[in-house]
Length: 374
Image (tube, rainbow, N blue to C red):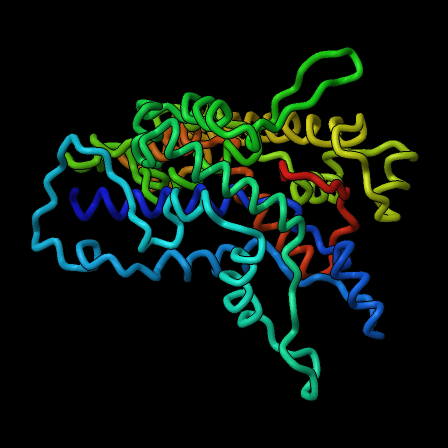
C-alpha cells in the first residue's frame, strides 16, 4: 500500500464521516433532553453555538491522531501503486470498523473536547461555553451505517468504493445512495412525483473533488500520476446545487426567490416546517432551479465576453489597434472560465457569501426543518 493511496483513503474517510453528519446546524435552542436539563438547573435557555466548521475541525483533529507506524513513517520516495485494496486499521479513529462500533456516548466523548475548545467564555466568570450535538442518536446511527456498509459492500475501503465510479461524479452519487440509505434524500410532490435532491451525497463527491481531485487545476496541467486519481471527476457539471437552508436564505434576500405571504410568515417567525412538506420541497426545488439559471447566466456572460474579444470590445488597446495576442488570450480565458462554471462552484461562492452575511446580521431568518438530509 503506497503512502499516497493510504493518505487518500484517510481523506476520503474523513470526508464521508463529516458529510454523514453534515445536517441540522441551524442555530437552535438546546434539543429536548438538554433543554429540559438546563431549565431544571435554573439556567436560561441559550442558543446552541455549534456550526458546521466546528464539527469539521473536531473531526480533522481526530483524523490526525493515527498510531499506525507504517503510515506515519516516511515513504522513502517509494510511491508505487499496486492492485491491493487500501484500508485503514483500528488505529485510525475514522476507520470503518471504529465507525461501525460507535455509540452516542462514545461519539460525544470523542468530539466534545475538540468542540468546546473552539468556544471562548461569554463572560470572564463563566466556564467554557458548551455546545450540544443535535440529533446525536441519528448522527451515530448514520456513522454506524457508513462503517458497516463500507465493510459489507466495499471491502472496508472508501477508495475502493470511489474507484467503482470510474471518475464519474454522477455514478459515485448513485453508488453512495445505493450503499447508504441515510443519503437517500428524496421527496414526493403533491402530484405523486418523486423528487431527488441528494444534497449530502453530492457534497461528498464535491468535497472529494476539492480535497484530492483536480478542482481548480488548469486544463493541460495534469501530471502523469493524476490519471490514476479516481477523484478527477470528468462530469462535475452534472451535480446540482446543494439544496439546504443557507442558499435559499441568501437568494430570498437578493430577490431571486420570493415566498408567498403564508410561507413568508412561517419562515420569518422561525416556525419549524415539517420535513417532507410541500413548503420544504418547493423551497429546495426552487433553489436548485434558480442556481441552474444563475449558472447559465454566468456562462452566457462569459461567452459574450469571448465574442466581444473577437470584435476588440473591452480589450485594452495597444496603440491604435487592439493587440491580437491579447485578444486571443482574453478569448481563451473567457472560454475556459465559461466551461468551468458549475452549480458546485457557484454553490460554494453563494454559501460562503451567505455565511458571511448571516454572521454580520444582514440576512433574514432561514427556513427550519429538523432533518438528516441537510
